Image (cartoon, rainbow, N blue to C red; front, side, top):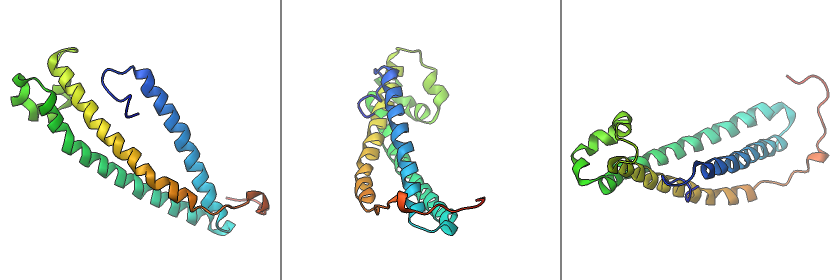
Length: 159
């Protein structure tokens, strides 16, 4: 995604990356839920799923915070870097207002500068996201290898 999330790249590549991310993310969510359910008895399944969801939410909040910090720290600087000199006086207005950003004609030097600033800032966000995946592999390796075929199924109605 780092390579393809730039203004001049065909949107099809971004869609392709999003599909890959969706398959990988969906697989990871199911496997971590199965892992926590296999580690406990039936009566505690709801509790361990709630705890697992809580930690996932905390991780998501941390990720959003880091992403926002990167955006806040890079986007305005990238606008200063990529905007034409005639628009540098308006950089704060452009930084704060999407309507102002979209008011420039498509293909104009101002609009291309804004797009380049978006692409550069998003590159750093995506780099941080990929770097954080380094934590994923040791965590997955710590999962205990439960043999699900050996678990006895609970009989009766489960609500």
